[in-house]
Length: 117
Image (tube, rainbow, N blue to C red):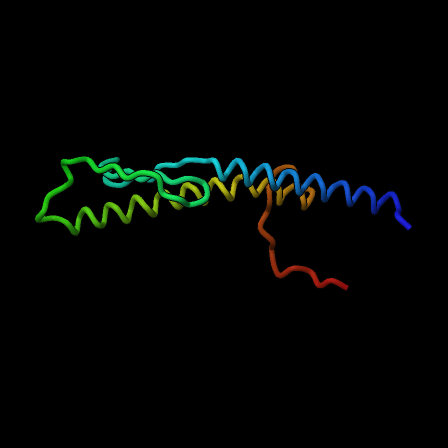
C-alpha cells in the first residue's frame, strides 16, 4: 500500500533526477579556458573534459626554452581542469543540498555518517 509519504518521496526523487539531468546538461555544454603565464598560454576545454583549443603567444616560444613552454602548457591544462571541476561542483552541490533539505548549500559532514539501523 502506497502512503502519502511514499508518494511525496517518489515525487521528490523525480524532482532530484530532473535537476541532476539539467545540471549535467548545463555542465556538459560549459566551456572554460585555462591560462598560464599571465595569459600567454590558453587552453579551452568543454564540460565533458574534451580539450578544444590551444593558444600560445609567440613571445613565449623560444627553441632554447622548450621546458618553459612545456611548464606553461601543463599549468594551463591544470587551470582549465580546475575551473571545470569547480563549475561541476557548484552545479551538483545545489542538487546535493536539495537532497539533504538545505537550501543554502551543502555543509561538509562533521564526522562519519550515522549508522543505518
